[in-house]
Length: 243
Ligand SMILES: [Ca+2]
Ligand SMILES: [Ca+2]
Ligand SMILES: [Ca+2]
Ligand SMILES: [Ca+2]
Image (cartoon, rainbow, N blue to C red):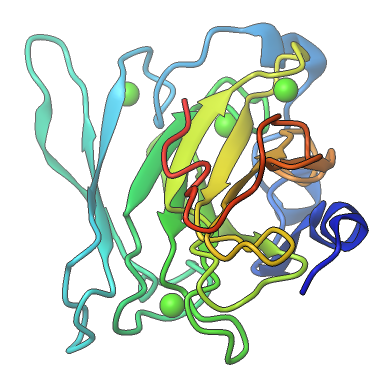
């Protein structure tokens, strides 16, 4: 059973599990505070909105339900029918495509590193972490002047991941602290709070220039003293939806 104090201290951080960090040090486009204030312009910086489409049940190289995300680009008059497809088997995307990952169960786009290009967060709530089944994870792909790139992708996980948390089942991208860098709300609807299995919780990860999403800290909210009011009970499924 996890105490409230442990939830706050241990779970408060969503950590980088693998993958290079987006930012100047990795060769990602440099951004400034001035650029962060500019209007984002899609994944490819052309000023036209683009679309991410999740396919969490997609079979990838025999792995049933590993999941995929398709990306379609907007264009003048109509959308471009030729897009991109990302899986955890795509070069540069952290992790691997395994049965039941559910990559693409949730998607959210926002300018997490403030460079004027939208980036994409992808939830994989069925992701196993070091033998912890279904702990869940979020992959972040960064936009460029040409297209969404896997090269600087990051994997965000809970510092205290437990089996069946299903982190990443719901996502919402919003600039919560008005610093020009979009932030990400991440639902973990099966998070245990105290003895209440499936009470659920939501993490908020803050965007930043160097290091991208999560480099500027995170917060964690749940019922029963965790900032959301009400009482944490089994099966509440807090953060099964966020937005
Ligand atoms: Ca675009
Ligand atoms: Ca995986
Ligand atoms: Ca960006
Ligand atoms: Ca922000």
